[in-house]
Amino acid sequence: MNVAGIQAIASTGFTTWLRGSGLEIVLLILGAILFSRLATYLRDRVTRRIDAGFRSSDALVRTEAAKHRHALAQVITWVVLTIVYVLITMEVLRRLGFAVTGLVAPAAVLGAALGFGAQRIVQDILAGFFLITERQYGFGDVVRIAVTGAAEQAEGTVEDVTLRITTLRNADGEVITVPNGQIVKVTNLSKDWARAAIDVPVAASADITRVNEILHEVGTKAYEDARLKPLLLDEPTVMGVEDLTVDQMNIRMVARTLPGKQFDVGRELRVRVAAALRREGISETT
Image 1: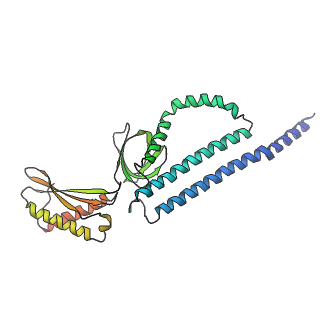
Image 2: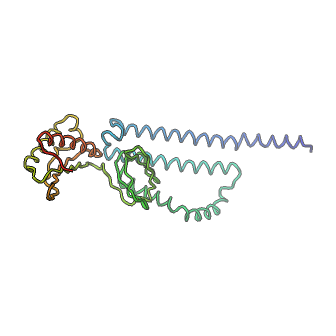
Image 3: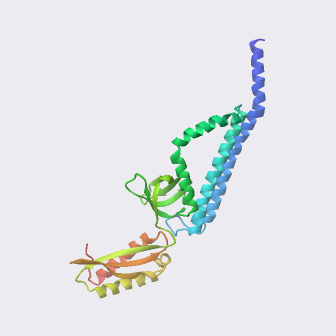
């Protein structure tokens, strides 16, 4: 048989394979891509419906149930796509001529070897599972996270939650990625309600009764303000003297706010308190 005949046979065999297994491989890959886009579209549609009526994470914070559903939608999509990709990969390998059943024993050995090196990944996934099921935080929450081996805590708004990682965005706009398995402690600053606490330092010689009256007036006017009232759960109250030294005393004022809004309310109340004390001729000490 001459070279031309061999080439013709090889070309015929390749064409037959391309029309059979080759076409199936292409269809499997295209199917995986289309399914991935469909799953992503459905996830985005679900999360948009959850977010309906809310602004970005810097506006009114989502309800606890909505935040949990948002996180669940992201995690479920991630898990489903991972399973689909694994199954598609196995089918492609089978059509390429690899005996998938024959790979069970080597895969078991490889899995055991990788298991020792992938303990942290397994730990991250298990920790992420409990984070989601226990509703420790969800999408849009403002959290402070203590991370193993890190001197400073990670603080910011939760932008993404999967079984393996949690993504935060801090006040400077920086994105912080934290593996779930390295989370030691979580402080949720936007769970159910929050509290803005303001310590007002005044001279020890100041009339404490008059200062308390001024702070009560500031709290009443703040609660009646059309811009602040939607962020407050009740009228700010004056707790009294929190600290006392020879030349200074600190009077604490607190306000219960919507979750995540304690910082905005605290800043606004400080401005109002400073202006009110200045009008009365009472200066804050430093």
